[in-house]
Image (cartoon, rainbow, N blue to C red; front, side, top):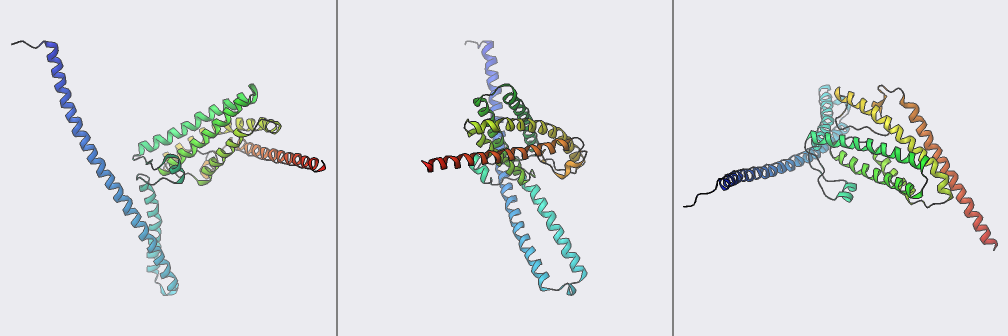
Length: 318
C-alpha cells in the first residue's frame, strides 16, 4: 500500500478544518437569518403598536376636549382638573417618546427620498451608526467648504474661463443636491433639522443650476465677479461657523442639553448665543453681501427690460 506524502496530509487536515469552519459559518448564518426575521417582526409589531397608540391618543384628546366643552369649569372638581392636566402632560411626553422610538424603526421614505432612492430603508438601527453618519455629514460639509473656497478663489483672482466657472457651478449643484439627500436621511434617523434649512438648500440647488446654465455675455460678466466674491466669503464664514458651532454642540451634548443627532447649521439658532463673540460681524457682513447681490440682480433686470423695450420701439418704427 502506498503511503500518503506528508505535504498532502497537511492539505487534507487543512481541508478538514475548513470544512468544520464552513459548517460553523452555515450554522451562524442560519441563526443570523432567524434573528433577522425576529427583528423584522419586532419592528413591525412596534411600529403597529405606536400607530395604534397615536390613534387612541388622538381619540382621547378629542374626548377630553368634548368633556371640557360640555361641562363648565365650575362643575368640575379640582381633582378632576389636576388629573386632566396630568394626562395632557403625559400625552406630550408620549409624543416625544414615540419620536425617539421611531428613530430606530424602519419608516417609509418621504417624497424626495422616494424619487431619488426609491423605497430603500435608510434607517440606521444603532446609535453608533447614526452618530457615525452624522459625523461623516459634518466632515463632508467641511471638506467641500474648503474645496469651494479654493475653487472660487481660483476663478475670482487667478483664472477667468467660462469652462472653469461652469465646473464651479456644477460643483455647487452637486454639493447642495447631496446635502438635501443626506439631510433627508438624517431626518429619517432622528435629526431635528429645521424645515427652513432644508428648503434653503433646495433653493440653493436651483439657483446654482441657474448660474450653471447662464450663457456667456455682458450680463453674466457683470454678475460673475460679485457672485464669486460672495462664494469666497461665504465659504470662509462657513468654515468659522463650523468650528464655533461644533464646539458649542460638543459642550451642550456633554451637558445633556442637546440631542446627539443635532447638527452644525449655516443659519443661526438660539443655542448658538452661548459663547458667541467674534462671529456676529462676519454673519452681518454676509447678509449685507446677499442684499448687494439682490440689488445687482434687480439692476440687471431693469437693464434687460430697457433693452427689450428699446428693441421693440425700433422694430415698431420699421
